[in-house]
Image 1 (cartoon, rainbow over the protein chains, first blue to last red):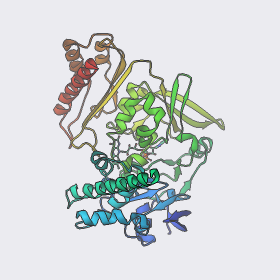
Image 2: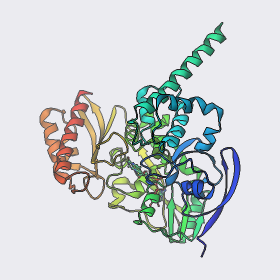
Image 3: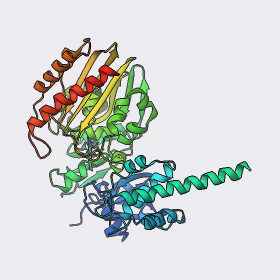
Image 4: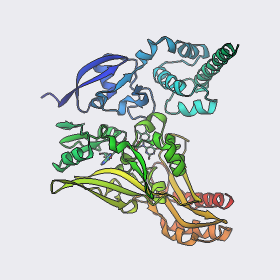
Amino acid sequence: MKPPAREITFTLNGRPRSVEVPLTLSALELLRDVLGLTGTKYACGEGECGACTILVDDRSLCSCLLFAVDLDGRAVTTIEGIAADDASEPLIQAFVNAGAVQCGFCTPGLVVQARHFLAHHANADRAAIKRALEGNLCRCTGYQKIIDAVAERVAALHERGEEKDARSRS
Amino acid sequence: MNSPAAYLVPASVDEAAGALSRGNATVLAGGTDLMPQANQGVRVFRHTLININRIAELKAVSRSGDWLRIGALVSVTDLLQNSTLRGICPMLAETADHFASDQIRNAATVGGNLCNASPAGDLSPPLLALDASVEMACHRDGRLQRRSLPLDQFFLGPRRTALAENELLTAVQIPLPPPRHYGRFFKLGIRPALDIAIISVALAGVLENRKLNRVRVAFGAVAPTPLRARRAEALLEGRILDEETIRAAAQAAREEVTPITDVRASAWYRSEMVSSMMRRLLHEAAGA
Ligand SMILES: Cc1cc2nc3c(=O)[nH]c(=O)nc-3n(C[C@H](O)[C@H](O)[C@H](O)COP(=O)(O)OP(=O)(O)OC[C@H]3O[C@@H](n4cnc5c(N)ncnc54)[C@H](O)[C@@H]3O)c2cc1C
């Protein structure tokens, strides 16, 4: 017997999608196993590690704890959407430059969370960056390089902002 | 994991209560307790899954008369960021700041935290210390009825509450704190974030001249339900917070709790920490 399901429509990385989902399917399973977007990672499955972080209506959430049916009518951004956005390129490059990627499994979740955080807190200090990333576990890097990468972006955004200010004043 | 057979997304409290009145339903809010519990097989879905996340009324924070009303779907992130809430109940923001991670706070709701009724639920001690009541709604005689219950009568045991099967928790109501209201929350855990409390404690009252009036002391993770330490409260009421009063209150609190030993800590350690954290919070209040 087919498990009870519901047809949902949502925006996925800017494009409308309609799909039938079983009632207990998680958003993570929908993305990976049904839609083939495997950038979002399954790791702990309990909301502890953040490897499955996605953005839903501009909130970052653990997709492993989210019922896929609850995506109906919402706007979802995954790492694939972020990677395709040119504006994310400097952050991704900062991760590479800082050596913030080792095995890489936690990286998509971290980039989604960091990108979202920077969009709202362009002036964050190191302590705020640490707090923002505390829901993302990394078992390789010891975190310093990840925080370095995000801090580098804050510094760069700041410099650019000041340049812009200087230009508009002159 | 079993599956519910049906799925409803009510748009109003009335509609949700109507759906609940037909019985055999599971309510879904943020899902941060429901989903892991279902995955672990400790929670079975009833016939109908009722997703309450599209009910606008439940997301509101409002002030009317002498009351602050926090809708059941207000998130832990809202507790941290909503300026009305921060202004009136800074203790709730302090609590939210020690709650899980950004991703979880964005999903976790106030109503879900209370209905899950974990003895270690972080929002219970501060809400008890703020004299909160919970508002519940159901359909009776074909009409929507609401009732209110003081939070300290809501918790019946681990994961058991006074909420009837056909009821929805709609809001938490808090009497507006009087001037010079003081409130602190402390959560003891091994990590600063993403940790279930070993113990938690909330202290509140009106603080003047090193005296607390209308004292409230509430603990989490030290009894089958979150609990008010009424003997400690009585010992503190209106007294100067000197060494002797603080020691007596901390001792009383230690005797009021009935912690258990589990993977996180032994009963003995929890008792020690109850009196130790109590002393710390009272010394801070005395110096504030
Ligand atoms: C990684 C992780 C970390 C966590 N950290 C903390 C922490 O630091 N502190 C803490 O206290 N908790 C923590 N939790 C537990 C959980 O996030 C909270 O209890 C949260 O507030 C639950 O809210 P929810 O909206 O997700 O509830 P849900 O999972 O949707 O629901 C919880 C229960 O309440 C019922 N319910 C929900 N809303 C209503 C309503 N309005 N009326 C009737 N019934 C309702 C549901 O049927 C279910 O039984 C954590 C969970 C995870 C996964």
